Length: 445
Image 1 (spheres, rainbow, N blue to C red):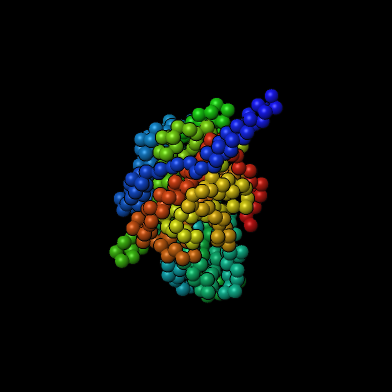
Image 2: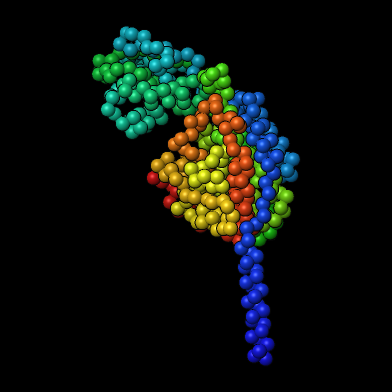
């Protein structure tokens, strides 16, 4: 009997060892290179006109909804289609004129941020703005930043030493449309690029006409219901933003900012992953695939989406942001933002053991990337929500330019990144692993 038990024990140990060895082998994953190329090229095509809210965003959303239908996903609970629509306010200045100390100010040196259709200021008269002078040595971020969101009328006289900052303001607020999740307050903030002037001696006049209208924008959401009744209520989100910045001033005759890497590459990954997991038919947890709108103008899409979920039921979020180029770690590598905030990264690393691919911690902590993409909203609610990227941040000269085109991408490496995401997420998708919650994401560091 003792010999029998000993033999059975050896047999059991051998079977266990065999099982562990088998379980330790990397799962075979094959992402369709044809799907990757087709979706990427469609989203970054000139026909999409840069996928801004006022250019080709709606066409991109319709294309992605068609992809989710082709794959066989289901609409999100409560929706009748794959498009999750919600309102924002579009604000656009149609005319601006200003004088300072009796001298006209060139229109390109004035930016008005207004929540009222007509602005008419004359110094010394009722309703005129409070004047704030920003000198050459001032800390722009600390002194000007809060004023831009003031709820009173403010005229900011900005010293030319801050000309580069002013240029960024003009790009953000002075050209084309601005967007707000709620109707802006009925006041105006004007920034005038002008030499420092004592505020008590300054005289000015400013008039501006602004159109304010409510429009409808849309996320695209598809669901693959969980196959394990005990895990189906738990959700794993795969996301990226499909919007970009639209039309720019022409460079060598090209004015379309195609956004091939930012973030058609991530959106392509979401479609390819949806196709992969649908074919696998092994997801214990419910998988939610979402292409966000309005990331480029404040993350409105992910903010709205997050309000439609119970964050306690979201097990993890794989947000995919710019994976079209080789990372600083070389081919077959990507990085994960907020690596130290949960064990999401170590889980993915463990699942890639035995493969050529590596996930690394974010090499650009000074950029605070963890807070700058669509993962941030759910992360602040405790969800282990992280972004995966290969973007060579300091050296990428094509970012937000007309040259961010498909030809600048490495589609083979991009496909390898998507395969690595699919492989490394398997234990989370299957319910074997549950990443720890994020406890300290509420405060920007």
